[in-house]
Length: 340
Image 1: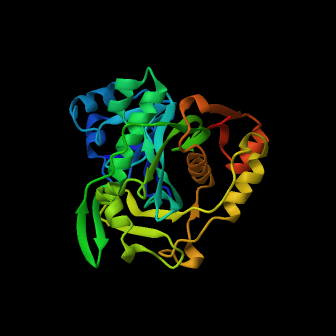
Image 2 (image 1 turned 120 degrees about the vertical axis):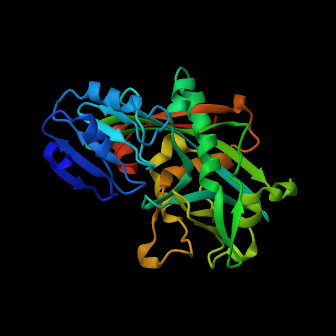
């Protein structure tokens, strides 16, 4: 059945399966779609109108978000199939995350995650889901904030390796949110769809364990900062087992990068962040993933604004496209929340 209706079938580098349709699919064809669990199925329709049969199919799977087929934009339809691929709403992507900095033994550590599907280490966070969008789409700040809180919990809960044993831990709960630290706007491309408006808000959390040692009772921090998880560079790492996203969670020892003049000196500050980027001992030197300079910028701003009230914070916006592209090629907008 599938072979009769597809002109082209390919698998991308992430393992997602693409069908290009040459005629309108039947309900039986949609029901027959199968691929590896955790890898998306994408239908390219060549301008065919498949909305009626997709609605008929979705009506048979009202409570299964992974099997339902969603029209993303243009001629592209998505079946999530257990994957963690980005979701789109009205052709746009929204995401929320957290700059989490922990002061431990007089030093600042930022909490980062290595996702199995990405070649970069970033702050915790992720994409808004459908339930969140329907509930909070009228307020983008709230929408991204709620998604960020959920993503932090989901990315840090699960089974870790501790003293050569597997231990189940609860995820980190980071509410209430204190304030924003950064807004990123990207011009993204997913599933062959170009020029996607992609909005990401990061919110700041600063945990001073030296001042509040009871914070070490939080399962994530209790295990993460155990001496057995410290590497030769002074960083801490938790390995996750069987998690659908998280491979490692890191507590990265932060250097001394001055971001107080970010409004006038952003390119040099980004260069300083890149030059001071530490190594993480769990990775082989020749296969060390990149650490996001934008995530680290947010973390240094987090530290610089500790103890400041909202009245002390101003929004600094960057619109120079050449400068933004020099930081991240698809970055088209950046705001940071910094002291005046």
